[in-house]
Image (cartoon, rainbow, N blue to C red; front, side, top):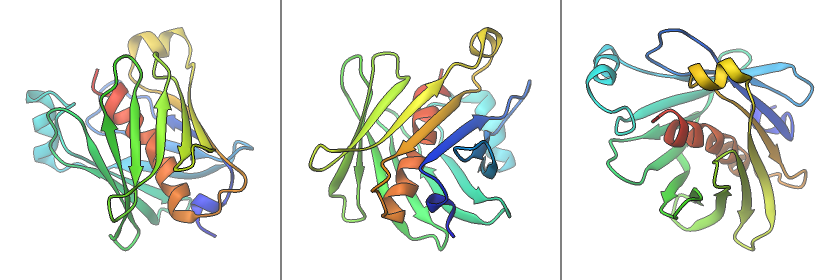
Length: 195
């Protein structure tokens, strides 16, 4: 069974490191069982660029892996200077959709598109960028993403975050489920890690 169909509730916990060049997240199901990981892939050159260039502009690639370490999806972004476009690929390297950051004053907004670049869903956040509602093209809710409080020390002194991703129980499309889970990482990389 695919990682994306194992549960309707995913918990994402960013690994806390004093010095880090890449991001690593642990992935849990609704009962707290570890079911996978999300790992950023960086070359030596990319690691060195992070010391010299604003990391909000740098490209990134993250692999969503199951408990056995097999990649089930890949999240990619190229160089960016304003609004990000992130592509999501399946385990064979074929694009299954994209997430585009859209400008809106005070409240973050992202649009999920299919491989033909047609909008299929939208992600809207609150002014703190902690709670997000995901709606389909008919404006019906299909999921939610919430940033969880990590404690005073973690929030003040690190950029390591925790997220809860809740999928609508009737959402059976594996591609959409993969893209929504990827959206939580996209939000972290675009809105939180850039600070």
